[in-house]
Length: 134
Image (tube, rainbow, N blue to C red; front, side, top):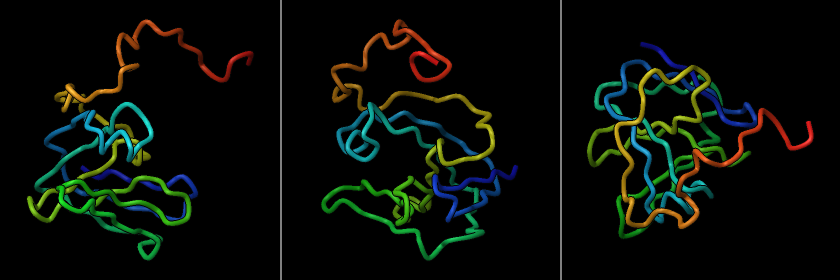
């Protein structure tokens, strides 16, 4: 299976060849800071390969000292991008960075003990197709 992805500004494009084995929604405090949201949504693969198609020089990886937490991002727009978690030989792909549909559903929520206090019963929140008033 081949999946394509890119950053928000379009300066970085990539291709993933292979399948994802896991899909986790991580609620740890590092992922909350990382995303500015309630959780990160990452796909994992031990077999897939990453090919940068455009803008590889704009990709920077940050590793949080003293932890296993890291993130790759576009230095133009800050969008989350794939990276190799070399300690485990595992490719980590932010689900939202893909331009193609994600075919698998999340396997689990992780680190629920540290989830955001407002991340509860979100399915009950009013849903809109666009901005309010549009």
